[in-house]
Length: 174
Image (cartoon, helix red, strand yellow):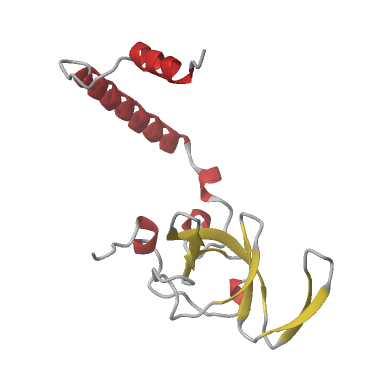
């Protein structure tokens, strides 16, 4: 099965530009592998680049038991501060820009073409809000039509009252 790019991937610039200190402050998304007990999937996680290692750099970290450890961050790594609070030193290269492989990165277009500005949603004008309201209204009308069609002669259709009765029967253990 061929995997298609999403809208954000298609809207990315053709060239990621310089991979250097200039990326500090940019908002990016990193393709991360998410593992649960049920499944493994990939997901774009948003974050901000907060630091760049222009040369091999020693950093001191603490673990959950307050033990301090020193480790060397190799030249060219970036510190990504993810929106969920996680922090990670990440190798960001031109080769892993806008791919779908785990570890790939791209600009968070909610912050502009290179992820450098304020959150764009905060800058919407009133016309955008009107368009969104019209879309919501059209979706609601479509949902109402589907509901009307559903309760016709369908033998599998249950009204909300019938659903409540089934729930009551399943939860009533007296």
